[in-house]
Each structure stands twice: as C-alpha cells, then as structure tokens.
Length: 390
Image 1 (spheres, rainbow, N blue to C red):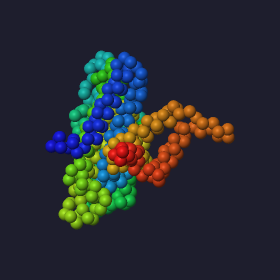
Image 2: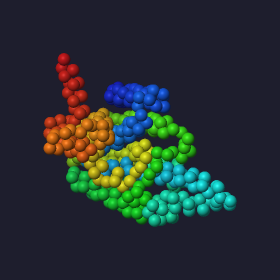
Image 3: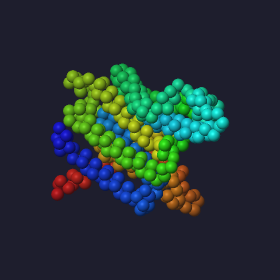
Image 4: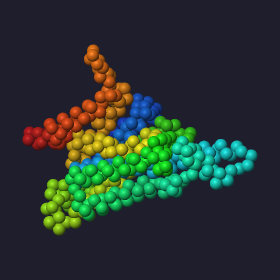
C-alpha cells in the first residue's frame, strides 16, 4: 500500500528529499557544526518558518481541499504554544526557586516551593495561587498530551455544532473568526490564568539544559520542526489522495451532490477540521519555544487571516504551494521588518519597510488573486505543462 501511495504521489518523495537536503545544509552551516555561516538567531528563524509551513499545509487541507475557509486555525496553533509554554515556565521557575530556597537554614517544604513558584509566575498580574488551568503544568507528558487534546477537542466540539447545523461559506468563516476573537479576548484578561497581556516568556530556556548553548538547542528544535513538517506532509498527502481525497474535494466543489450520493458530509468535514487543528497545535508547540514568548496577540483573528493569505499566495489546493507561500512570506517578513531591507528615500518621504511591509503584503495578495489565482504553486504547474508539450 505504501508503494502504491508513493507511486501515485511522487511529489511526496521529491518534497522529503528537498527537506532532507535543506536540513542537512543548514546543519552543516550552523554554529554547532563549527562552520558558523548561519547564526543561531537565523537557525531559529528557519525553525519557526518550518512550523509555519506545517500549519499552512493544515490550512490548505481544510480550505484548499475541503473548502472550509477557517479563520481560526491560528487559535489552535496558539493553544499548542500555551500548553507547552506552561510546562516550560513552571519547570524553569521551579528550578530557580529550589536553588534559591536550598540556601536557607531550614529546607523548604513542597508547599513552600509551590507557593514560591506561583508568586514568581503570577506576581506580574497580582496573583499567587495556581489557576486550575495549571493543574498538569508540572508534568511534561500531560502537557504534551494537552497540546494534542485541547485543540482537538475544541475543534471537535466547534465543528460538530457548526457542521451539524450545516453552516457553510462565509457564515462558517465568521463563526471561526468569532471563536478566535473570543479566545483572544479571554486570554487578554489578567484573571484568565495565563498572565493576561504578559503571556508566557522565557520559553527558549529548556529545563534541565541550562548549560547547553542556545546554538545547540536551536538546532535541535530545527530538526524537530523539519521532522514534524515531513511527517505532516506525508499524513496530509495520504488524506487528500485516494477515495477520501476525492470525497473531500467533492465536498469543496459541490457539497449537495456529495451528500446526494450517500456520503455523510459532516463526518468528513469534522474529521478534516479536527485533524488539521491537532496538527496546528503541534506546530505551535514547536514554534513558541523557538520564539521564546507567547501572548494573546498571537491568537488574535488577524493571525489566522495572515495564514489564509499565505496559502492563497502559495496556491491553495497544492500542499507544496502552501509551504512555498508560508516560507516566502515568513522569510520576507523577517527581512523587511528586521531591518534587512534598505529604506527608500523619495525626497519628500522615506519608505521604511518596517511600516510598509503589511501594505506590500496586502498588494501581493490582491495581485495574486487577480493575476495568479493559482498562486506560486500554479507557476510550477505551468512549467511542467510546457515541458510536457515539448
């Protein structure tokens, strides 16, 4: 069955080969390998870009293949980041507190350690006690389980309510955006249990690896991000191929006809929506330890809109197109907003790309929609078609 899947989807092998070669080149050129042509900060940027590529592929499956324009998938991405960030912050703070209290004449009790950890984490919002959300924050295994369960269960509940009511089109998009907005507004509150606007910080400091250089840790996360992207690509390529893929594309093109043929449309849509939400949560859990911080702004509806723009620019309905769109926009964003792009003096006004990058992104989206509706991925199709004609 594996050989049949790969023979029908040669692009999977090509993508895995390209991803493996890219990972090898980055590893060799990193500071950890001794060459040092790629800085630690740039390795982190590449690792974060791979995570964004993974959620872009998930978005492409739910929108480009199934026809569900979800404007809330970045919420699942953020939930995954918060889930792993809670353990990272708790475990790191506990180590610091224990080292501090061990110098006291009387050894601290477990209750004193817990109280001190709570004061360190929640003192910034005027609280000291651990909220119920942090019940499993001392367990890495349980928090990793939350990375998968919380986005999955939220998507399952939301999708079941929406799909069984047969909400479709722009109304479904508005509902997903409303869900994201509600979550974002809740997280902004200081009594949400997640430190409000302050968010969770210091996530790049991995507990137990305090003496390990950031150059090494950043490369580890880069490898993990590359592995997750490779596995995610194979998973989604399998989902959109064969009979299941035909049904999913049929739902996108003519939902009523697929339902008339006897398929339970709601089940397929719920499966795709929930699976992509889980993968988005995993991508977020890998992204934010590389970013070092997560706050409610990361879950705001605008982030999910950007995600849709990436997929549209790359070419929806093509897994590799979503990756191209996310990678190109992410890296260009880092270049323009990070001061890499030179300002353009016009005499009467100076264009500063840190201010104009989003305008350029908006124009790019409009241009792609009008002149290249198939996105960057469509250019590959055009090249292949011309090659076949010759």
